Image 1 (cartoon, rainbow, N blue to C red):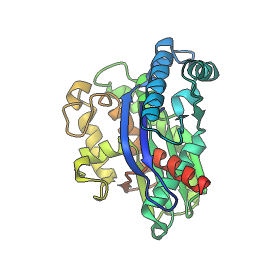
Image 2 (image 1 turned 45 degrees about the horizontal axis):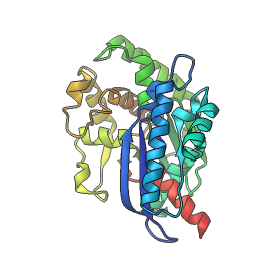
Image 3 (image 1 turned 180 degrees about the vertical axis):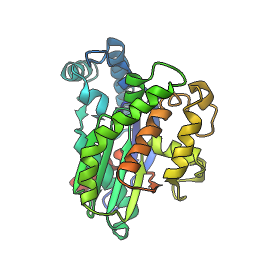
Image 4 (image 1 turned 120 degrees about the horizontal axis):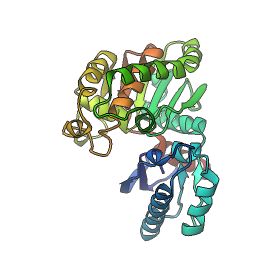
Amino acid sequence: MGSNTVHLVAVDAKNGGRPTPMSDWKQSLRLVEMLDKKGNIEDKGVDKLTSAVKEASDLAGNLKCEDFLAFATSAVRSAKNSEDVLDHVEKETGVRLNVLSGEDEARLTFLAVRRWYGWSAGRITNLDIGGGSLEMSTGDHEIPDIAVSLDLGAGRLTHEWFDHDPPEKKTINTLRDFIDAELSAAAEEFLAKGEAGLAVGTSKTFRTLARLTGAAPSSAGPYVKRTLTAPGLRQLIAFISRMTASDRAELEGVSSDRSHQIVAGALVAEAAMRALKLEKLEICPWALREGVILRQIDQSA
């Protein structure tokens, strides 16, 4: 249960094997945009969340899944009424959502990235922009030396900062300063660890940004190398920040569900790369879901 979507992946998994998706279902939720001014998930958000959990649970049952791993991320984690929401979902569906901490999100995503690229990559620094939060991690092993989570998700910032379409230039500049300030302490800690052998971006936001700057489409498959450069990203921001959400939705690679938040996502990506002195990211097709699956395989071996 992400801050943007609910996503069920049924996987044929075995120890030592590559987790192979056998069924893939998702539904737009945009839960992070249903937080009221007090930080509570609104009633309509609770209803949508409950309905989505029920549908995913029923589908998993129909697929005869042996294990059902139900977890939630930033929007539920940060909500003031999180426990009440979790209790309601469990009462109505029988499913108790496991709320991942931000640090666990970063660690599990890092595990997936490490398994994808292998040990030859050396030190990896990974960035992941979700709907509700930004996760950053770095390390030489499968467990990162540093794993942090900041409330800098693309959907959250769009909901909290942008009230015009396209966003006003003054608001964009103020948001840039805010993001820089939020990144400052973590960036200093990351830079103290030294240069990464490989800098990686995960998540739909980074895949979309890479596509908009010339990377291969998803139809080319997961093994095609895709990159996002800092100069390309800066040029892209200057272009899309002047467009309306409906116009951005016409761009190849941008879904209508996410077109309104891609500007905020791009600002976070640009600021994080600048703060960590990264000129290029490789885009990894594996992220949090694969990390959760890989950990489950490891623990059941």
